[in-house]
Length: 385
Image (cartoon, rainbow, N blue to C red; front, side, top):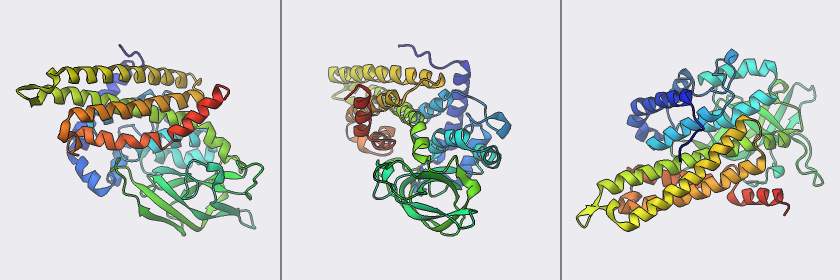
């Protein structure tokens, strides 16, 4: 089916991203995987190309685009080439809405220009060793000093994407005592400068996929944060996190759609070229049927995600509908990529083939941003169950 979600501007941008990946990313990508992240200067290069701040206002050096569709184009081109841009997605797709929605004019002046240029890379620290998806149970504390000039943070975070290289980390803390009657109260977001004394990057986690996206454990030991770096109002952190969930889950959904589309294309190309028993693998009925199934399911995913993109641009994408897009998109991507890997035979298990990297990279999409089980719970509540 013909997709109508992208226009000429998106396609021109697509060509720029595709050319950039071919010339500057693909040739050195194996080095990034070995290092566990791209070189720091890579993010400055993304800034030069205008990729980091597509949705940031022009006055801060951004692209001034309200639509998230350009970000979806980046996801599609990365998946097609079998690469990732490190922690780019967290920085551009997740963090920017927080800064624009809740940041003061003074904070925006301090942070957004560097955000767009890549001079200031951002991450967000929510998950803790004992919390997982239960953000209301966050234990990291931030106590206001007696003179009211700064907060003092103590605690630990884990599974923090981009945490190893970030310059600023949006840290979700408990600024008032835990209330069992209102577990979501008392959380705040503090923007921590990672050069601050007492902040430390701990173990860098070795994942089965997303090898160029650094994921780390963080520790806070009497970390002082100026009150000027409180994002929004004290005690409203949980509300802020919930507000941004729709875009976060849409980002994961269009990423899953992109990886599924790439897998189908890789499988088609491979089965046409690979010969077994004297004829191409694509000539066998089983191959045709499997790829027909994959193509059909892929189009269903794309239709759902494209509709979600349109709803988001109109400000009408609800949290339950974003959960539906994430649930269906990530689960379908898992099925599609698994079938496409099977068609590669033994070579599908070899990491030099893009299908193997897609298989490993995509698995986590059913976990982060809220597990599939959490998505089902949200959807069930939406239908009155």
